[in-house]
Image (tube, rainbow, N blue to C red):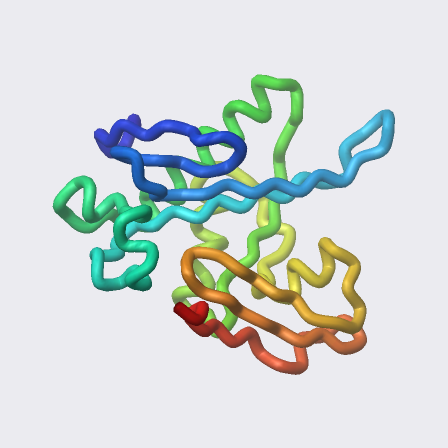
Length: 178
């Protein structure tokens, strides 16, 4: 709301609605002991610059994007920095001295596109510990040495095969059957 004037509301447990339609989703994973947190994984997916035709037909009435709501394109890096800055601020206020972070980028992201993830972390004052593709990150976090990582969301499904801790079949994203 601070960066873009949309009336966003949380629909429990993890959807963000704008004008009654889903524009974002949040997922978290926590690994902790009784006396300390080992790690927290926070995944935020925002439909930024999609138009109605970009959504599968079955989602067009239920989903929206910032671009659709604002009537103009949105800077994805600017939005990412603003979201992360706010999350880091809140964590620090809650007593968690966040100083370093890792990021996972979509499979097939390379070069300057991959470096954007580093830039976002550094823009909020975090030391970059690791950058890795999403399937590898999911495999590590979920302790999958050999198996599959299946990503279902936003009208698409992606599958990566992991063997001996390495992605051997790249992530393939396909639309869900109608």
